[in-house]
Amino acid sequence: MQADLLITNIGQLLPMNKQGPVKGKEMNELEVIEGAAVSIKQGKIDWIGSVGEASVIEADQTIDAKGKLVTPGLVEAHTHLVFGGSREKEMALKQRGVPYLEILKQGGGILATVHATREASYEKLLQKALFHLDRMAMHGITTVEAKSGYGLDAETELKQLKVVKAAMEKHPLDIVSTFLGAHAIPPEYKDDPESFLTVMSDLFPQIKAENLAEFVDIFTETGVFTVDQSRRYLLKAKEYGFDVKIHADEIDPLGGTQLAAEVGAISGDHLAVATDEGIKQLAASETIGVILPGTSFYLGKDTYAPARKMIDQGAAVALSTDFNPGSSVTENLQLIMSIAALKLKLSPEEIWHAVTVNAASAIGRGEEAGSIVEGRKADVVIWDAPNYLYFPYHYGVNHAKTVIKNGAVLYERQAVR
Ligand SMILES: N=CN[C@@H](CCC(=O)O)C(=O)O
Ligand SMILES: [Zn+2]
Image (cartoon, rainbow, N blue to C red):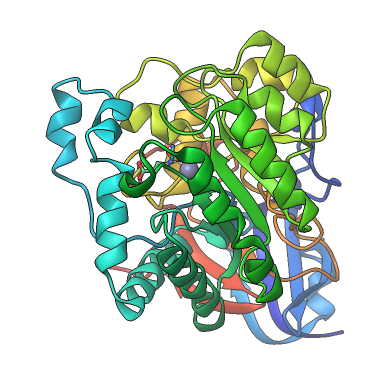
């Protein structure tokens, strides 16, 4: 048997090959193959078997995993990848206890980044996005969702979406685009959010025609968009053929979780203050809860999403960094895995489902990313970790040793001695 690349001596292989999204207690059932080998041909997984069986394979390149953990590339289901500037000065305000929504009300927060993004050139935004994608790749991420939402005018929203499209061509990671024009109310429409939403929804035909985004998202929150406004906006997006997502129940429990289930959103994201009724409706729906505990951590909150309850009641949960310049400034999904164990009380088995197969399902890539399955894309990571339990345990560092994207080594950590 021939192969382009053979990975052998795998201590533990997580194939993550269940049909996603994996819901409820099934998230706790993890298949682990010990003493495994994987061969890759033309960018795809060609064969999975034991180290012994692999001896008959003639490969152009062989990687000895040295008994370490091998998993699918991580899937990052919620990022605000494209933005101008940075907001390190807000950190002091947060330390003084100024709430996130108060900073926004005063024209800071998201609106500060809107200002910087409007000012930034297309080229500058692209270079910045590529830089962050590199860092994600170095942390074992092979598929990334990217939102607009720091333009809040037609011109800048389209500029952001075009940057995402260019990044798809220039960067080896797979990128999935989301239009988040309804991310905040810009100063020009301070007293007329309805008209602003019309300006944004008027972009739907062009975004569809130019294939600039697959998903439409909205921030349903106090001082931003109401549940009613969000419902109308998202239903309109669906009429144009978009799947929808919601930034829901992040700070105030307005019922965004219920709305996500009601409109058949592919995901409801944040859900930090989801109510029991919201959890019940989420669990009964096909909507995936994309939980972003880095946000609670980074905003210094004591409240974390009731992800434990969601899974116990049968919902599908994914985990993401929410990488953005304000509420979660990290490209390291491995760190989020530790926060999920410590603060959400998820098991390592649940966490691995949440960053692979379920994250892929939450961005419409359930059939191609987040799993190691014969015939699928060869997105594979060799971790400097002895087993899958090691992840939430050894926290805050990068365990990625070798990141393979479409069958080619994309990143290899250099030894210091
Ligand atoms: N909550 C709304 N939007 C982002 C934060 C964006 C920002 O603060 O710049 C989020 O998902 O956390
Ligand atoms: Zn977000």
